Amino acid sequence: MGIKIKPPNPSRLDLCPFKFRRLRGDLIECYKLLTGKEKVDYRQYFQLAMTTLLRGHSPKLYHGKSRLKIRLNFFSQRIVSHCNDLPDSVVTSSTKELF
Image (spheres, rainbow, N blue to C red):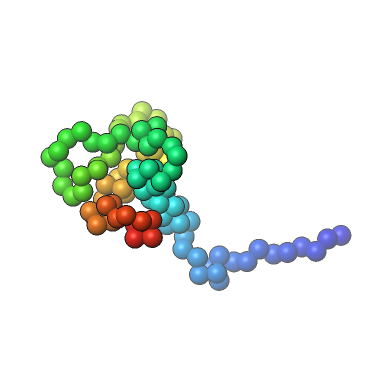
């Protein structure tokens, strides 16, 4: 016989939906990888786009094609379009807090 604790209802905690929290965390992690704040080589996850005919900020990520639909859920695939859509002031920020 133990005491059963009921977990709080997320709507009462005023939390953002999970997909927004995951996207925010993914964008912060991508920023840390690309700026060298993590001790991991970003080339393990991303390729920079080699063309100069792109709009917006210069460090655009290459969005490769994937054969399998499940691969679209991988970190390196799901974050590319969101990173490429960020404005230049956000991408070139010097600190994570400004990002």
